[in-house]
Image (cartoon, rainbow, N blue to C red; front, top):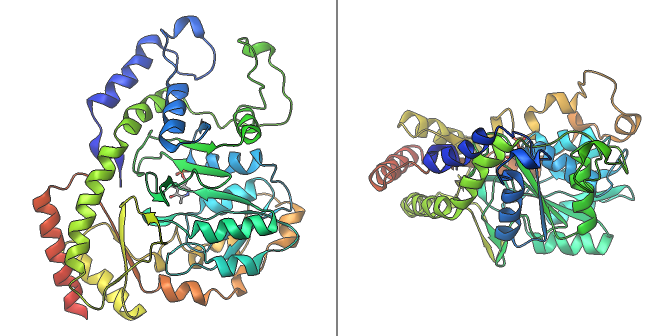
Length: 397
Ligand SMILES: *Cc1c(COP(=O)(O)O)cnc(C)c1O
């Protein structure tokens, strides 16, 4: 997955443009910038690549989620449905707005289970936020149907699946809003950065204002702009955006490498009857950033994880025990450990997750191993890796 692996002259050239003018900020300083508007350039390129009317860059994927929610009017006491398997940014962004994260089970797609989503809807629900984990997507047709039926917004967290598609459309472009991260370990990177994409003009107008202290961005004198509503600072710098301009231009190259490497590993593992691959919704195409597979039992999955490491296969994750990505280790959330007081709405409405039953999620996560697909492997290295993986898995089944 990581774009940092293939980082070089193209990125350097873009950053040099910014260094030469010294304008490190995305807004203003028109006379000094030698015509370089890296953030704007990347936004136009991203919107084009994703087939949406708008894209707005921000400082991180977490900021993108926060800005996306805020731009759709999500605030204190609104409930946002999110999966038990995701990155901590999901609930961080929701809580940042005083909204309430409602955790919901995943299924064999490793993303939101649509039936569980429908059961979790209350009069306070405002958004359904599927997270396309490890390169593949939620059942977006089913989720869209539920959202339409209950008048909810669909916000896709596509931070780990940029370039994947569903029924021919880019992930992130299907919901009312979509978010990407360009942090250092994502498929393409800005160092730090993120983006919100949408076809909705109002959300876009809200997003760029909210992410810049509520500035209306009318005219070309920042000093006299007015503030139609409260905002915050989630701006990206020109330096980071410059890196992204070069990386986005290479997205299809990276995806092709991931697909080649993924396919070699998958074909090798397919010989083992006990290995079952993660389910991809009909009409979906992964971005091939991870190879995810189930073992028949939790015990075998744990043994597989250990055997892979023992056989020199690095970058394979057993998320079930992982600090960052699965609800079991989110003690700071379940015990509501915040530095200051949480909003009253959150304290009143947050379910007691220490007592929650997510055994349906455990059923899948306990059996899952996820192996990162790297861009830098040669074909020879990938084939050797495939052999080692097969050997490791066969040693435990
Ligand atoms: C990386 C990631 C984020 C947050 O991105 P940052 O840029 O690191 O803040 C959000 N959601 C998912 C699924 C991610 O993997």
